[in-house]
Length: 248
Image (cartoon, rainbow, N blue to C red; front, top):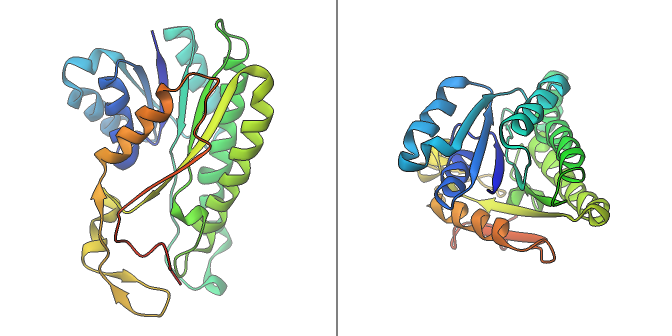
């Protein structure tokens, strides 16, 4: 039995990842703040629904994260794949006008929450038999270059790249592989507005191409399928014509 965990799994990329992994035969722990969307993911899984375990969790809360992993261990006995997906953005306001509270809210989820989940995954993966596992971090193309008025989100996603590298290095001795998936303009509820127009680096507003979110799910399944002696360190999956190459 292969066991995966997806954070931020109630919608968007997380929902697609959870369903894709379940379809590929994984038992999947789906974590998110709200119970109703997690239950909807389970019901959408068809024949694979019995392999999905919804666990409402605030990943910015250390106690809640510990409880999430304890539940996973109690139910399945091990964890093979963690997809660190949960993330939020901040209001699109000029850097000098960002409230401290908004900055800290984004850091708490996008960076601290990812660290807490990674830490618990390490503790579980290094103690289980067979030992080891895989951690996949959602970095976003914003881990490489920013959009206008996005300092909190961009800063945390750049930090995710550092966490990915540190995790890959520190996990070697435990047979824990870590890679990062940078996603650009996958079509979800959050990115529907891109077809109407979003701010560009030159001050204009323009529509941007998107891609099918199911292509992200396929990328995650591929990364998860590798043996632990092979690793995709970084992968970018993006809409071919989106303004990324040459952005700015």
